[in-house]
Length: 197
Image (cartoon, rainbow, N blue to C red; front, side, top):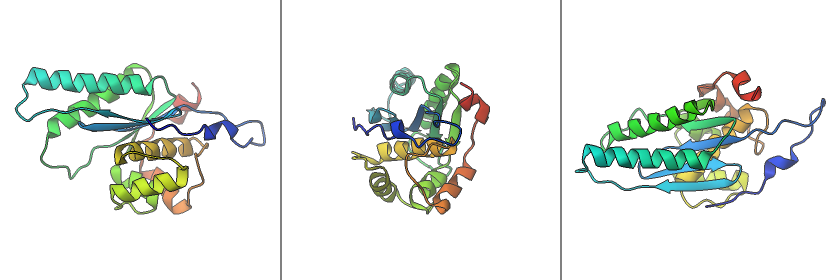
């Protein structure tokens, strides 16, 4: 687990008083390595399966991943998750979709507002280019946020979290306007559902 310094604790005061402090989680959901970013840092939930696994084995695996992810997230004001990749072919498409919905359902059951950020928006927010590969996103996240990241799943989760904080007006770091334009492509929840908590 990589721990980030509490950079949000020293948020600059606004004219009418101190800025609110939001608990935001970023989630890069994957069958093999789900990245989670919270105030406490980043972590990776790993899992392995086999193509010949039975329905029962697959169900147990997906439920286990979802339970670990929800425990890792805890209680937050907003969860920003990466949306499904539309050009994802092969592999376990049904299982990936099922895991995504299990986690979203678990967040909603806790009354945690969920934002869905498309992969291209995540890349654009990190690098300014929606077509950037994961390695470029990881390098940009390490540079901008001063994080030591072990893998691209955690880097993606950190970028998702940073985007959520930026949308709430409490960015982790200054981001160029061209990068911030990516926030317009996110399916955000009702702002009052987040800020009124």
